[in-house]
Amino acid sequence: MTLLGLRECGLAKGNIKGKADTHVLRVSGRLTRGEGFATREIALSDAVLAELGPRDNWKFDLPLYTTGREVCHASNPQCDVCPFRRVCAYAKSATA
Image (cartoon, rainbow, N blue to C red; front, side, top):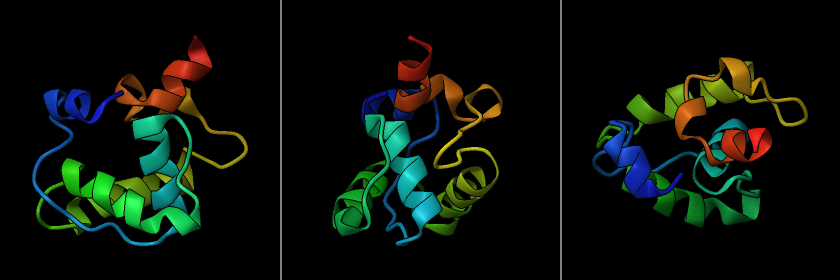
């Protein structure tokens, strides 16, 4: 899913800075490019999230963190129950 696609779905507006959390990096990367961001890619993750999220970073950061912790696991993501599955590049590539 492209950044434009996420905006069209109502999931992306405003500017934020993401935090360097493993769950946030994994989910934001999987949503936008099909694979998680590495910790060395924090600046890239921040740039992508700045295009996606609301001005208050916690409004977007917490859902990404929670999704990564409870659903989008590193080794066995549960794409079928993920709230982002319809717009997620990783989920779309996994079902293709």
